[in-house]
Length: 94
Image 1: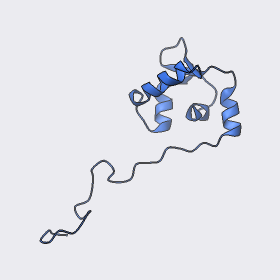
Image 2 (image 1 turned 90 degrees about the vertical axis):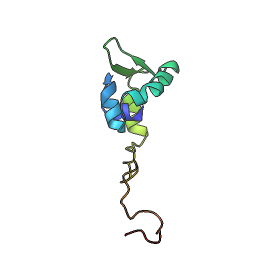
Image 3 (image 1 turned 120 degrees about the vertical axis):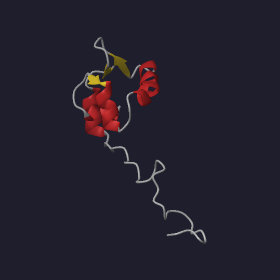
Image 4 (image 1 turned 30 degrees about the vertical axis):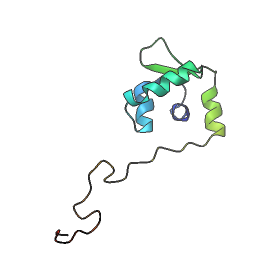
């Protein structure tokens, strides 16, 4: 929700929210559904758009809650390790 507020005044495109969080829209679908179920956000009539259920809630969040951008993945976090990473193995070139 804080990432939505960071985008300015709504409604917000689902793709832009996902991009702000560094995720794919599909990866956020369960979270979106939970927030809709709790009544915090709603899907607008325009396909792919979301907005806060409480008017001006985005302003409140920007004013009172710090925004921390999501951490960037560390190099090699997806199995792209260098050949010399890990324990030394006798007879293995370094």
